[in-house]
Amino acid sequence: MLPDLPPLPALTRAEGELIDRYLEAVDLLGRINPARPGDTYRGLRAAQALVRKAAELRDALALMHQRGETELHGDTLARALRVLDGERRAARVALPPNGVG
Image (cartoon, rainbow, N blue to C red; front, top):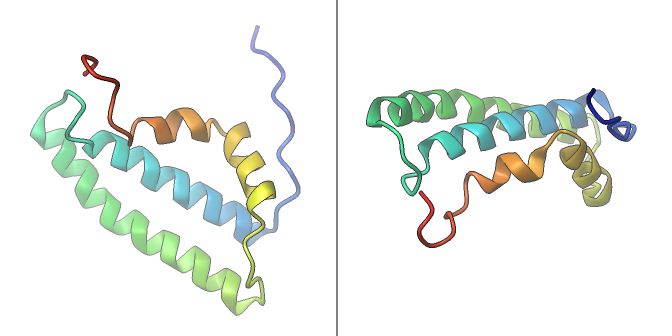
């Protein structure tokens, strides 16, 4: 049985879109990370997809700005990222510890 996850904090639709697009970009960067084992074709495919995801991330931020959401509420968005496993996902972008590949 899976543990109960804390609920997502209340987000605007645009904030939810921002979080989703950000995590998708992070996942792709993790697949591209040259410090991790894998094949070049997988990295190439992830890099190609990252271009599209970066544009979607830009569009999510532009929409927030256009709607008057001009401030990012870091504490709230960080809670949402944690609920959505953002720490583990973002760790794949970092260099692995020495001797771990």
